Image (tube, rainbow, N blue to C red):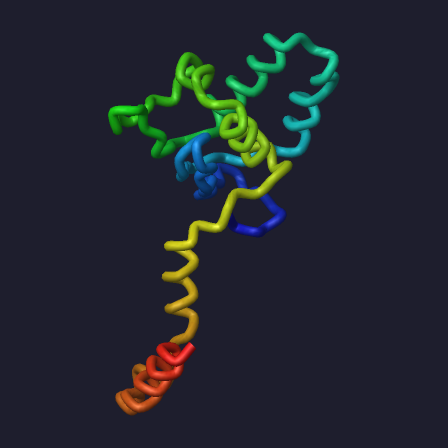
Length: 147
């Protein structure tokens, strides 16, 4: 997630929802955040609507805002993003998707992406590119292996 409050036009975010054991697998997806005024319109009298109407709001929002996902079926085949398939997703995952897309909640930290980002942020590029960095990098690696 970007962590930025302003949503530029055409902006897409990458997101991860961690697996819940015995409920659903980890899901990575790209989405366009819903703008605040649209969220207000979607949620106006939401809890007074019928269950069917609430479901349609969630499904239509996800259908329009989720750009892609890596959700697969029990055979490992990619699941297309359709209303029919959205109706077959377990409720906790579907609710998380909706809450993230509507900016009520953030996604989970993708540990692989975070690890790559953390590793690259430890580099001192001035020392590295000067040609005199072998000792610095070796001492950092040795220090990390002690931790």
